[in-house]
Length: 194
Picture 1 (cartoon, rainbow, N blue to C red):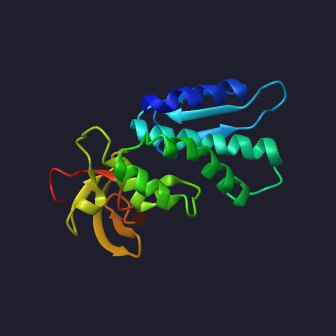
Picture 2 (spheres, helix red, strand yellow):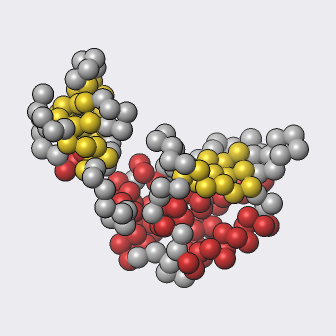
């Protein structure tokens, strides 16, 4: 997390009496919010493998859920107008303090015009955040040529097909099924072109 952001997040954790947990990498989500249940209070978890800026955006996203739940309980949509309002409001101090690099800040300001359920669905914001990831062996799917064979984390191999609007149509080589992939999906180029 960027240093200037930590005191604000610490205040939120204390103020909302929230159990804040840094979780192992989850491939299906970057963070999670659980509302109070029985004797348990608010719980937020954020993946440990995110870069500092993605970690902060995800943390604010989850705290916006907490605030929305406090204000409305289960009477509003998880990413409805109330959540969007809270997310914008809670992101404001970090924008004002310039805790983000300029490319990320510009992408966030653009994203805040109509924030969605996941920051990773906004390609501009996702690209800006990924620029600050540590180098890895993996490539982004959009960087591979057409018909390239690649492997995903679970070991399955695919052949990259054409782009349909935002996603790539890819053929699974083990079962013949077709899957649509986000262009920013992290994949490993296969050693042999099967």
